[in-house]
Amino acid sequence: MCMVLYAAADAPLRAIPDDGPVPLTVRPINTAEEAVRERFSKQHVYFLGSHSGCSCGFSYGYSPTTDAAGRASVAQLGSYLAHSVGALGPIELYACWVGDEAEPPRERTTITAASFAGDLDEFQLRERWFAIISAPAS
Image (cartoon, rainbow, N blue to C red; front, side):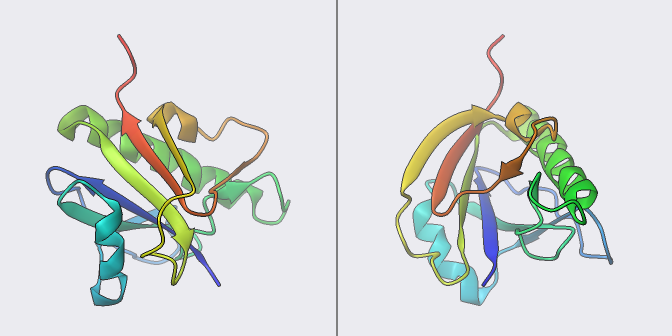
């Protein structure tokens, strides 16, 4: 089973195609993922994939064989979110296991894109985690 990460915004996000092993892909949700739309207050909903294709690769500090790729995926996600928040305002995220898209969040938080800088000792998405990504306080 795979972890999946979804994002929602008030305006369309920039898509990033899955053109081979890239650290980040962004695409509109498909029909099978439609249930996740209920988790969000924003209209435009997207799937965010890591170098692994799913969102499991947004992780590092747990396996030396995948740490560099995971760190690159998390850092690219952070850059993408920072740019998107700067251009569009707050972005909502929801992480869950495949098949749990209709389940309510267990945890809610508000953070900045800096949380995805890739500079922590370890990072991993949490199950049924909802976050609002806001701009840093000036």
